[in-house]
Amino acid sequence: MALINVKTKEVQIKIVYYGPGRGGKTTNLEYINKTYREQIKTEMVSLKTQDDRTLFFDFLPFDVGQIKGFDVTIQLYTVPGQVKYNATRRLVLRGVDGIVFVADVQKDQRKKNIDSLNQLYENLGTYNLDLFKMPLVMQYNKIDLKKNNIPIIPSKIMQKDLNINLRAPAFEASALKGGNVIPTLKRIISMTLASIQDQLF
Amino acid sequence: MLNQSQLDAIDQAIIENLITEGIDHVIYMDMAGNTIAKHDNGSNSLDSTAFAALAAGNFAAVDAMAKLVGESEFSLLFHKGEKSSIHFSKVNDDTLLIAMFNKDISLGLVRLKVAQTIEQIDKILATD
Image (cartoon, rainbow over the protein chains, first blue to last red):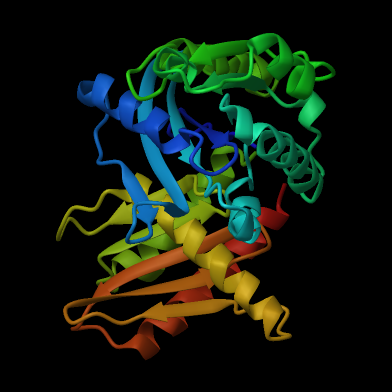
């Protein structure tokens, strides 16, 4: 749940990038860090293994200015994607306000996307949170691989696999080059802010 | 959500018990990594936002380890450094109090003062 401090007039919002391993969650944050470097006061924190896989989380806070007199800070987190790290994934989800689900469009990743989304639903359940009521944006990442003749899943099928019931806004993206990274971010921020507005005012 | 007078009282408890005793930084935060109150004595600077995120992760990981060994929780953590050390203490299920102090202050004093502060914060939280 977003932290609203009436004394310091600050709002802290937690957005988590979730999805299967090697899907591009960290790459999303790295691109955001590079693009908004001037607005970000602190370094991005990455807890990773020696071979650069996320071990616990990446963390990137940035200010989005004032809303009705409150300074709003967005805290972006990623989770480790590898199957074996579910305990840590669950820990990172604590207090989450909004989720970006980063799916991998490569054909051989189809099952991993679905499994990861199912596990997200279960993990949120341990905090009594419902994915269907949570601000959520879908991102179908690595769309650029099509140019390299790597077989990818068409967005229509991705929608059918992951989004037929959730009906969340969805973006095709190529996080490595920044394609649709910022639109995804803007969308999840506006949805999350809208959802906490009732608590704020 | 805490109200203004609760936040004022928490600030006062932290400053009186901990900062005036010479503790460098104190962060009162929730388990999601959000800072509720932070104070320092101006001796050095700290990126408290990133610190709180890492502290929440650290505490959550140790909490999960406690469950694996059959403990309900490890309510207190201590990291010792050469020049400064960090003391983590659980206030309730949702919040943590973190104190960073230099080598001139004894761990015993920190533990005592942190315990007193937590007792006061508990009382403040009960006055909703």
